[in-house]
Image (tube, rainbow, N blue to C red; front, side, top):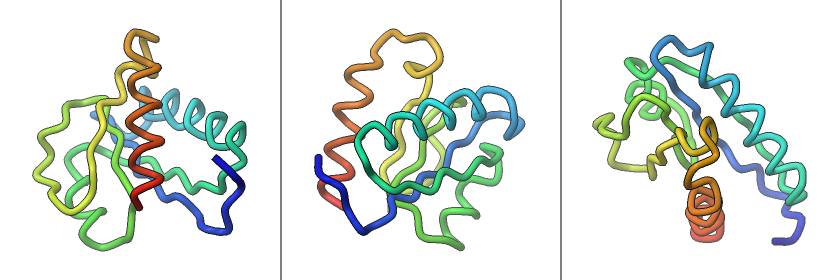
Length: 102
């Protein structure tokens, strides 16, 4: 993936908007930096996710608190693999696919 002028916007949510979303946000920022992609990673609470997405433009949502958030206009990825390491490669494959399509 080459450097792009576009900024990828990601909303990362967890139950309280601070704990696991912080870990996932750091890992995503590192990943984007390694891919030389500009990214804006925003943290939030899962209960606010739908409203946040409706009021802002995001390319995707990453959630550590389930993926049934009622969001239909952007992809929602399960962020647990970034916490556990299990399924991490699959997560990044999905992420790359979403970025290429957006």
